[in-house]
Length: 145
Image (cartoon, rainbow, N blue to C red; front, side, top):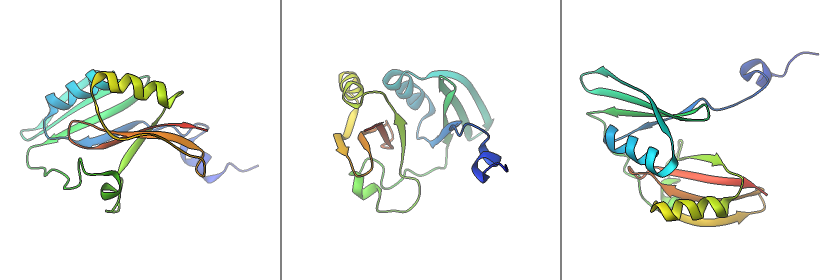
């Protein structure tokens, strides 16, 4: 039997390698992803005079933070969820968690800014909530229901 197209591309396990995020300030973002999400800095490099990159990881998944001095802040960053979704393209990244309510409680204690409280969406089989990172990027945490 021939392998499916997805299996030919991803192999037996389709798993994200990393999430790339353009950031305002590399040190601030390293601190935020370390303090609030528990990621650990694994690599940092200055690629050019105006371009710095850091990789933070947790269990083999990376967050690649990219600071380009001439970059402009996303005009929708930090806006209400539907406003962020009003422009086409990638608008958020979702992390799967075992218990949305417990995760929300932990994150609430750390002081992160919530974009929405835990909500169930049975039509899609998910319970989720969103938070903003230090640059206003939208991060989702969800569990299958």
